[in-house]
Image (cartoon, rainbow, N blue to C red; front, side):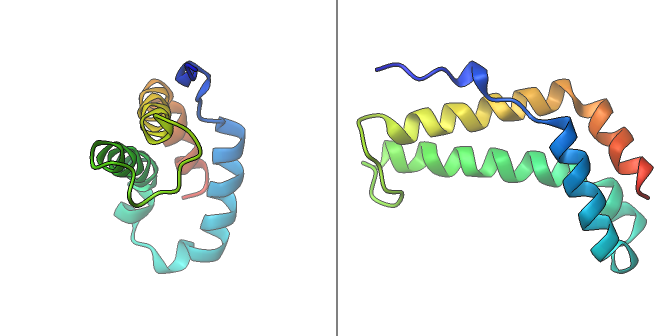
Length: 101
């Protein structure tokens, strides 16, 4: 069974909702640089998760529970596709952050 990672995408609408809520709760304790780097944090955490899924797949699926063959490989591919989509939407992500600075 082949999984279609091309369906993975960043919802800018949800990104804005999360950003707004996060900034309302944490804006005063974050530095300007930390606020500016929020899109990078989202991208980095997604990439890291993809690397963890890939590593687990390569090591025999011993950490993450799987329900089928290549489950962690498909998860990794999906995370990497999401990173690629974030890169395409990078300017919009920065604009959203800037609205709530």
